[in-house]
Image (tube, rainbow, N blue to C red; front, side, top):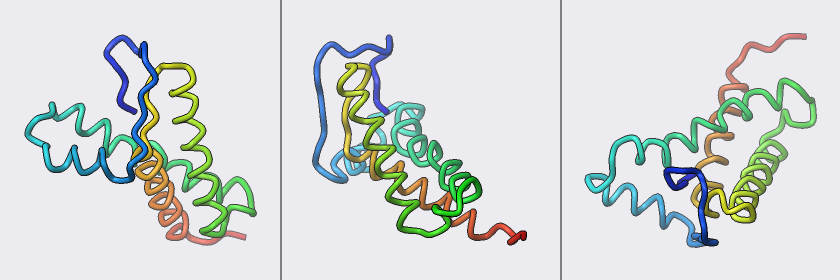
Length: 117
């Protein structure tokens, strides 16, 4: 989710080490503007919560945890690959992790909803 100010990126950058960006943001919290930190950590989580709630409502297939998480992970991965290929951002595996976690939180919220027939 980290993109340069004008929305374009002239190089192909990527970060494949799980939790590397997350650890950097947490351990160097004081080095970042709050909006950058929030966008790149909490923003990635919040972005996928609605998907975790809505997919199980829309289709019966995604009312189980594993299919829903798999879909969230694949969708997030595709977003990261698209950012990399279009050079509109960077591929960051931590974005996939955070967004999948957001989908998990959304799925948890779905499970808390009252059942209707």
